[in-house]
Length: 532
Ligand code: FAE
Image (cartoon, rainbow, N blue to C red; front, top):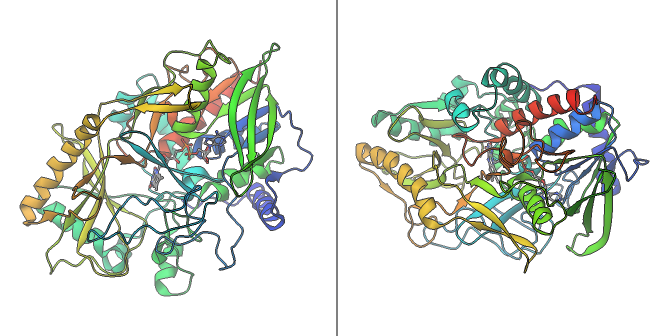
């Protein structure tokens, strides 16, 4: 599905370009009042859907985003830096990159020293789990692998039993897929191109173990990718770009939902604004306190934004932290005890297998995964394992995977007054459940192919990386911390629209689910709450 570029998208894209050219931190109408009718925190999937649907409904909306706007080229002519040569643009205020793969052949060749800057990828470290998130206008869409997967209906209903699945699969999943511009690789091209040899090799090995593989749709424009392969377009997915941003080809939210939101003329985005506190005024309106930072991370101004209604789209970590802080400091004392609970890493585990010398995976690998080993219907050990690229430009015989297991363990966030931040109660034994499930699947594949795991990729000779996640989910679970439509219990007029609604696991890559649930919430809230 190619998203239709409406007049609204074009107007919005124009606003984004003007802001980038002038180096502005405010994008959208210059005369937007500080006290918009609605305030949205975050510009990831949940925030972007909220902004568009509010703007369309004629509601003056201000959006706060702690990250930067990513559409101005640096001195090298590129907006984002590459994965192979990361610079200050890669990570959120770091002096050294912290990529998911720690080493290669046990060598510390992956990470590089960089200068601190509001870069596009962040790794938030808790005691026994670290969480990768995107920072910038577009949130996770700027850094993710673009895999756009609608979950299996049975598992969706198991996780979110109060949501009408008929309505989701009839209306909101199709709407989300269309708006995000989800498309699929041409299977004939897949079978012949060198860029997906790594996927075909993994498919062959899975088949030998009696396992099914399935194509996975993506928001990367496969027409563009084929032109990259033909040498008629600048390489992005085929140029090693992904976790530090794609300069071309990817339909990130700034090109879809957010462009359309700005195009309504009712939406303003304030970048480099980190929401810190929320309070309720006597008249029932809300005030959000936000720190505006400069490119060195220094707080240059603290501002207050008033609103009648507040939409939280700061992601599982950001939204949960804001609400926990508000509850524990007494600013919103009526919030439910459920805030902070029900968190999970979507059962994420990464692993690598070492192939035989004759099973080459190719020096050329596209960064966009398009295939998964689909053992979700196995009642003993349901796993969906995305076949991940490892594009080094050299043959390395590694098959890499991000397995999504169905780990029932859940973590809890707690507010820490000493740091004014949050801690995550999640321990190694809880991660072990995911690793054990992935191991059962990959032991089968290794046994049938006489192959072994790679020990050199994740540090400490580990074969499974179960200590980080790309898919943080939960913290303000739908129907528990909120009602069944994301209305926060104990704070009338506050809504959650992001991944914190999903109870820790959804069985596949989550952004299509997050987008579809946000569409469902916004359609209900605009029809009901704004009509009052
Ligand atoms: P998210 O996209 O994280 O947006 C939250 C936004 O709020 C961010 O822009 C933050 O900077 C901003 N924010 C946070 N706190 C504040 C604050 N206090 N004040 C102002 N702004 C704030 O949330 N998912 C898939 O479905 N397919 C994939 O292929 C895939 N690959 C991934 C690869 C990587 C490397 C990563 C990191 C993630 C990947 N994901 C993938 C996960 C996906 O990007 C993630 O589930 C969504 O982005 C979550 O959407 P939310 O709207 O919850």
